[in-house]
Length: 127
Image (cartoon, rainbow, N blue to C red; front, top):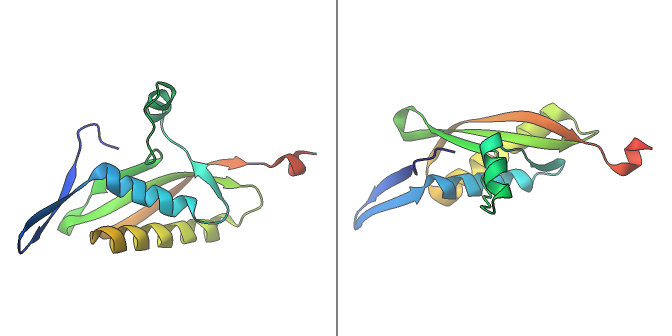
């Protein structure tokens, strides 16, 4: 996520609505975590350090980039359970994130890029 807080603005008849990038990232993160077979999100080194220092962010592992025509590109770094069909799982994540962000915020999502950054192996499989 960007260090300088980005706000997405929607003009309405009585004024305007500003939605923080952190809010959009949190909505996307919750949608990712609801997909069966996803173990978690994988943040970058900066997010990991911030978490160790006590700053929790639900949006770690999510990056929001403004695109043309006031749409968004969302990158998700995820860890999946061993044994999952990765392409099917990634498609489910794309659908869930796009649907959630668009329905909750009213913003348009142009792309959802899913990066599989790790795989989690359960104790049963290790034996």
